[in-house]
Length: 483
Ligand code: ZN
Ligand code: MN
Image (cartoon, rainbow, N blue to C red; front, side, top):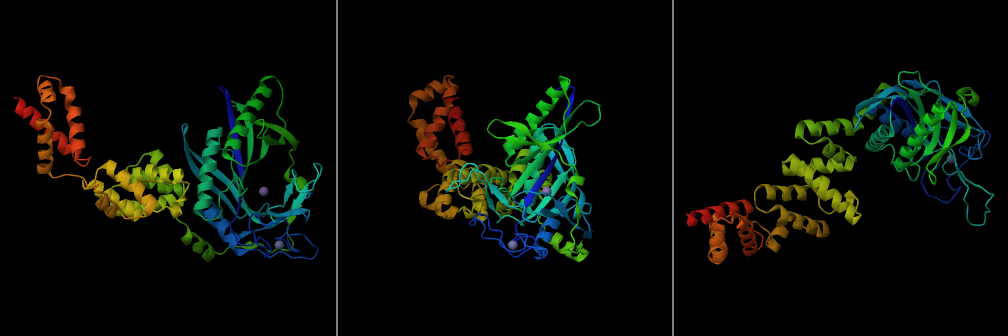
């Protein structure tokens, strides 16, 4: 809206892919029967003591390094006190004034241009349990059930600075962040199952004015809801201010049914939680050596990877971004390229044919029958003129069905391209000789008939004639004999 600027920051909770919970040995398996993954520690029994899960720290540190954060040698766990039925201890073990990592960034690109979004902090904390309000199975409408399987599972909270200016930028940031945590094998990125949850802080201001009061929209569990909630908040706040109202600092809830946000509670301040250092856990110390080991295991991240594709292979922004969407796809592309030599062709085939057919067949790439080596071979056969692009697509579909090697399919089905000029000349001469009427018309000036002859040659060669050679010979023969 002209004259107004929106200021958006995101807080993203990512569930870490550990086998066990953050402070006990209970399994984290999603979807287990309710209250079967619990013990005295995660149920908050008096006297039960937490023991930190080292694997969670390693995953958290990986994400911090991948987003350019400084991982602090020493950080401190703290109790965040509040009452809620899904929080049996009455406090959440989190990190407060001394988080694991601070000061990172992610680069995003939208139609509005490139932007560096600063990451304020990343801290480790435990998840709460789950309340089930729309309970079936005997519970009546005014009953809520508590499932504590999720209580104590490890999370990282990734807090951005308020650097985003539109819902489009918020989506680009969340997309990139999701890619990064998945590249790190830190989180499965599944928003539907709540592995990645997003809160949006939104405020608006008139151009050049100081920051306005913000509202926080909680628990946006899809990209679509994030965009809708942010857009709704921006419009709501501008309308409020333009009619002389004021924005109050509050926590709001997005209602997917109406596409609106509504006030949930007045926003609490940090001091409301009575944060205090967790007395049952010593400060978390991450040694330089441990950090080096984490760093050594990290793959190349999506942003530098996409940039490398553009720089070294001349790929477009869109192609490179599509190819780095998942680590699996990027690695598939790179292995195809290693076998095929032509970056543009490898990119096109992977981006269009491989992704398209996987989607169509609902097959994950990991069980797709065409290996990068096979696709590379197919692309080389096109490059060398052995088969046409059309024949390659036919062969590719068969490869995806049977897993058969391309040369075997081409041989068995007689798909190889006819590139011998003498053989093609024979066919062209036969076509010209048996189309007297059209030849006469062509030579009298109806050159539009050329396509007709091309069609005849392709038909006579059962689609195998190399089109370039066929065109050249057709012109040569039609024009020569006509003069
Ligand atoms: Zn437990
Ligand atoms: Mn949190």
